[in-house]
Length: 365
Length: 144
Image (tube, rainbow over all chains, first blue to last red; front, side):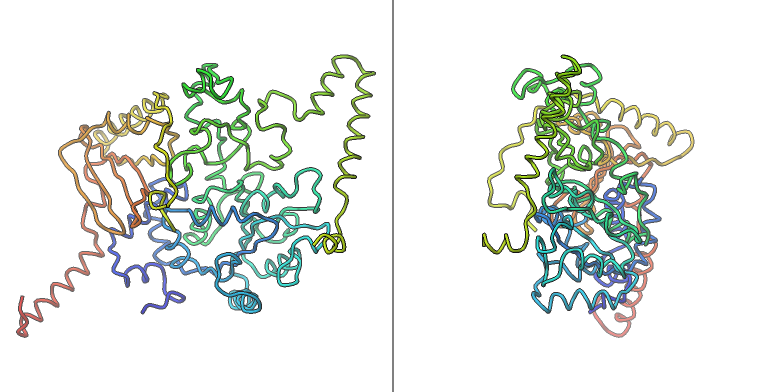
């Protein structure tokens, strides 16, 4: 049996009886998955031929496991190939068999054996308000992240929670949630945002590192440009209707039935950068806009606080802002009243979401 | 990992409205320009259709328009691949599937012959060794 820890990918595949044609086909699918031009296939083949399995440590913090669910539905190339043949997934709460001390020992062993070269994947935000909000084996998320990231080559923040704080950070952010980039400042951090991220984007980033040993080019939010370089709007198949001024005004009108643009129904496609329009979901079956619902903008920072999902982008954000705009129209005096409402609302929100201590949690459990 | 068609949850028939969203015509122009380059310069072009924003019906419209030509081939390596020439000679439709039966790549190749159909140098070298070993065995009395 071939030793997959020391052999290159090319050697493993040849030992498994995969022909050169099969390998080139695999490289074609990999290029497509990494959103690289087909002309890159020979370079990918040459690089993959010599690639060795990188060690990956996956940390889960304040999250819903949706990102792992997304990854385990990735299909091109199959996840089994990616994980078991091409990366060495040494630690993952949800997927690993080991538990307790054995699980933590696996993480420490991977860190020591691959010091300076392993990848850390994080899903979930990190609570700074109180360490008791989220712990693993008695250690806070912050402690585990700082300890594990110290010897890593790079950190991949998977999902909007890890990338930008996500839903836990939504106003009024009761746990003091922050993103990975707020904590890890001395290592490359790649943000693969989305709620959840597109599975092929997660595997695409891992495959890029496996193939070239480098990290892909990133945008201003630290996301790979290959997948987040253009807006949903610019890649949307309904874009021609937007250009012609043809919009659905309700979810059951003639425009909706005719597949017209969903801008008026709150689609956040014009301000959202992601690859949903081309990569699609569920094995390429469809994506939200194709299903008749506007984009929620889930790959953008603070999308949860960006106003109503069903408000068009041209409508000011939130109920309070609408109050302010009405007040402005009525005069500066009323504006002052709105400012008072704003202040009271914040005080009330803070009162309702007061800090929760470990003692509080014990009382309610 | 289960494919969609193997989950116990009933999946309703795909009902998205098929319209002509106008995304096929620009692609056909791109194919036309690439075919011209192949004719004049011999330049090979590959279009990755996974990167093209297709709406419901767009892909079918494209495939119907290109039609079927004289050559069709099936490659069995890490899952099936279907390679067929369209009714426009030099324009090939290439679909790669993985071993779970999921399509992992969908391309249009504008070339005289898709490279994957050619025998690969590494495979030829391995074949030669296997053939020579078989002949050596035959010389030693093994049945051919």
